[in-house]
Image (cartoon, rainbow over all chains, first blue to last red; front, top):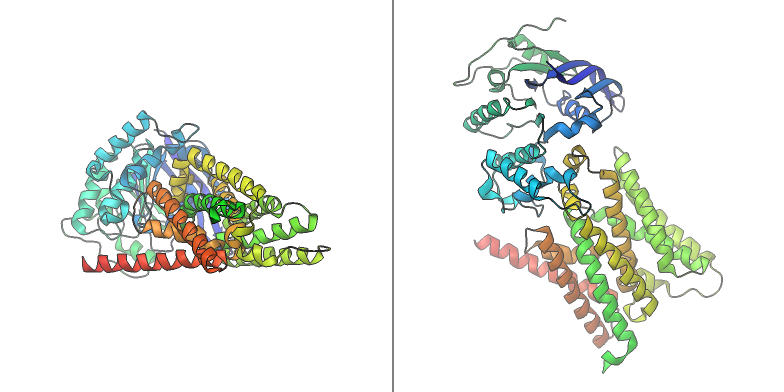
Length: 251
Length: 268
């Protein structure tokens, strides 16, 4: 099986502060990986490094066997929707189309093909009816679907999601993971979250991150690991959510 | 009739040309939140005016080169500096102004009225100035028209644009350079110090009424022309300074419309 992300001995310093240390990770083309860790644990930094938005202090990252800047054309990125400027005068269709921006002609115009692809993405996300609505008038859940549609319109082979379930209620969260599960048949998915609730039963594999990264493959995490990560015991059982237990970290 | 005088015709043409540039670029300044960095660019442009006067060239032409150069530097340092971006912009702001004053002080002989560059004097606009303004407007129009979707994607979400391989640094510098050109257009109309007002007020007014960037550009262009014509007319009739009158009319209109809109929203 081909690996699409390969991270070797990666460290990253922000100023004098070491945010990530000696990270090693391989992600394969049918993976659905959840990376969990506390706020400030380096999750978003890791995503930005994979996307080539930041340059590693040490170590190497390969994205589709290329550098992150070259490989990211195959990646659909879904940033935290809570960070979007909702006052911006742009409608849903324009946001989704912007996923096609590097396919435009010399006048940066979208082709019929671009429109078809982005319409398909809106259809998958069930937001065709919202296409002419300005983004400030959407609910949080709708806005997030718009951002995923934008990522899908880049025709990605890997979908990267940053904190996709923050501020979403439990039912919406469960539906959302079911939907991602369907998507994961067609592309690899990596999502990062500080939310330990529903995620563990929906993703195929889990990695824990807090400066260092521990990969847990397809099994579950013992409460002790969470204690180490978060500094306090965490309730892992949610209603209707099967509960898994992972092996302990080796060190 | 006053319309027969060349200076008045020039004033009207300058006002309309300035309103067009402000409508287009001001919309980006407002939605991309470039207000503070635009303040830096406009004040740094004064360095170009001073240099032009010292060298004996048309100050507007020198200001074009100078402010495009300084806006590129500002763009680069504001992106590369991990923190205190505002401090660096403030420093460029002051250095540009100080350099302009310094150069004017070095200029031998008669120096034209400094206040007309700081606060504008639309009644002294020459045909040559109008020609420069026209060319700058054409450049702005062509660049924005040919990169509209890229500017939109970039302004809305810079990080996502970078991931989709939009050349974000280049796009940012192009946008700031267009702000610099707009500032040069505004120098003779409202002056360096009041340029910020016309870069923001017509676009801010337009943003009260529309949720589309394209409509915002068109509407703020129209608002800008109305503000300009009212301001020029009133300043001429009452014998008041043109730049300040235009800015006061724009500012008061914006605040009144903002108040009316808030009241309507509250009652709904």
